[in-house]
Image 1: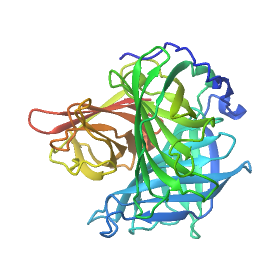
Image 2: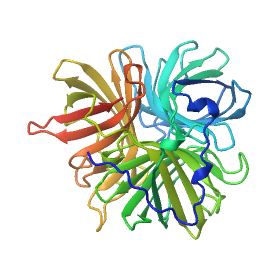
Image 3: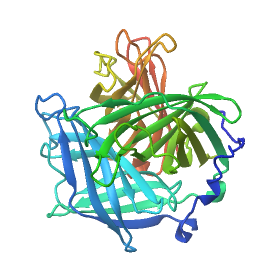
Image 4: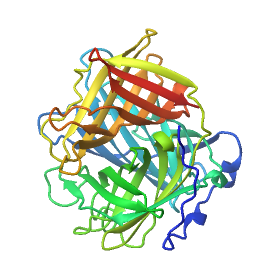
Amino acid sequence: MNRVHRRLAVLPAIALLGSVLIAPAALANEPQTLVIAQEPPEISFHDPNGDGWGAGDFFTFVASVVAEDGREGTIMGEHRVTAMPTDGPMAEYRVGVAVIDLGGGDTIVFGGQTGVETTQEMMTPGDPLRRVVLGGTGAFAGVYGENVSVRAEDGSWTHTLTFEPVDPAGMVTEIVAEGVSAPVTEIEMTGEAGMQRGDVRTWEMEAETTDGDPVTLYGLHFRTIGEGEKGPGSQTVGILALEDANGDRLIAGGWIQIGPAGDPLPPVGVEIRRPIIGGTGRFLGARGEQTLVHHGDGLITFTSRFTLPPAAAPEETIVFHHDAAAPDGMTDAVAGERTTWEIPLASDAGEEATLRGHNTLIDLADADEPTHRAAGLSTITFADGSTILLSDIRRLDPETGLVSGRCVRAILGGTGRFAGISGEVTRTKEADGQVRLEIAIQR
């Protein structure tokens, strides 16, 4: 598999890459543990269709946190309902992502699946919830691992993050892309005017690297802090993809500060950092940090600095199949339309798992692009409770609303026996109409 090992020239406007910091403890070649205490969250539930709480509905949350070293910060995130089983102990499954911001540019992003026994309620107190440490910025740039969260009776949480550090000296691959942002699509999910919690933003832009290579950047973000709640502007949490001409993708996630009403872009001159959490093709297994700077008039520079694992064959490959008639289509074709799924998987070896996830339509087919594009997250849950988290970015046939052709998704990490993995999942449709998922795992 081809991989990027060249170093692209850095734009003069970005002289910031030397500012990446790693805490001294993170330089040790052994797992690090960080314990975070969280206050009970402020939760904002959203049922955009007004038809009762169900699949596709979601909530955002914000809370204060304190790290074991005394540093104070904030946690914010979003979770979308992907399924509401009619049997078994769980009443609801959710898939989402959260960001812990400890200030000074130090953030950690984690995500995955949550199962709860009562709809619109939180985890049972005392039960451990395992999710994926996707990456971080600043002192946590490039980290990956697992987060075990436990809810207390009073609604507070304790997060125990165990992660592998990445030596910043290894982040020698750079891609600098610059372009003018296309108009941002703002979808009011709450029915209230203005920048409210729960509103969705989608956007894309065409850009060029400093070598003149064309790339497309597109993203999906959920507003977790509304305008005026914590100063001017608002804050959003989500994912962003950089896609090259070959369709290979570099995935970043985290939060972005947005300007006040009338200015849908980040404040001019403010450097925003987000972790690089995975990739496909030549970006397979990428981990590092991305900086975003808005120079004014919509001109944005993205600087991605990351490390790649050694090129090697997958250490483990799991092949699943599922019914092609599974409900993964979109029908109305409007920006912001969302869909969810819960699909049983079976392997040739007799192993069973469940695929749960959600997507939101980012942009529509036009004369230059014959497919719709959607973005979201998926989890594969195995019988022993282990999970694999995927960046679910796909192209959709505008006629059927279903996945168009072969689709490759980045593995962002896992829990249980898949903790710390990277890799990619390839989706193809076979002659008998079944869908084949080939999970190629690197450790």
